[in-house]
Image (cartoon, rainbow, N blue to C red; front, side):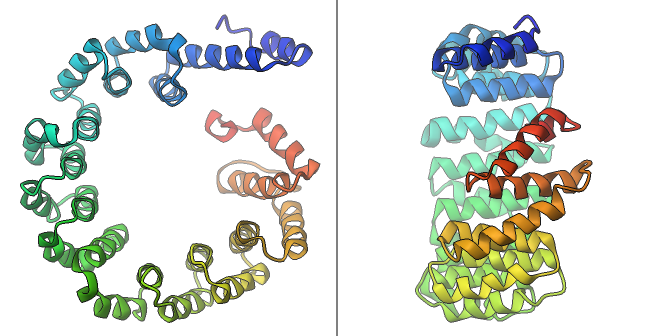
Length: 363
């Protein structure tokens, strides 16, 4: 807390203990919550929330008057069971910062559920997109049928983030009356909306969605085909997803090939896994990384997976690593080794914690 990080680390290395480790963590969060940068204060608030650290309640209360609106909103969420936190959270519904307002709207819906309807409904017409998207999420938490036409209206919003939140909310509300609104977004020009619409329509239309799901699984859009195939697999219809995986694995785009392997890993089917292991021979490292992850997750071909992980580590970590995607790839390769108690992987991760060019990289 006094900025003596090196001295603290040295103390811990001489006298390691669970209690000292906890005090060290609390001090780090305390310092983050008082940092000059609002994004680090926000990270401190989130860490304190997730850790449920009673010792930091007073410092969390100080953040209720933070100059940054997002920090104030999340601090109010953390203390919403206390009068002061609930009062600030209600005030944040009127915050001038749309991002801070959106946090309050969404979290009021999550916390109060059905009772939040009257408080959040007006934000469907907010002039800024963030609160409108938050209103869709909050209305889904209410579970009320009155929320359906409001959410359906937001699926036609000009902002794609609002449309995405609204389509997702249709599925969460679960009322069959939302199926047509979901179906209209199956042709949206934004891929995540098409994917969310497919899931919502499949849920709301029941067996009536089978024909469309089969058509989508055989369609030209590989990511939609994989998603539709996965939804069909949940209904014990496996062949469409196997065909979609096989097609994705020969796509020219490596990102599509990764999606094919990721889909295979999510399905409890040995044929899908066998198809995905072809990714071990892919020229793109990201595809090979995905294939090794699948082998680890499904406990398949341990020796072959270890050899591939070693080769990827040599390729991605032993050259000089800079920033961006190269840094992230090396972290992933080192993690795969470290998970097998490989000291080279552990040492690489420790080095990157110390030498990462940005705090986000080190985190």
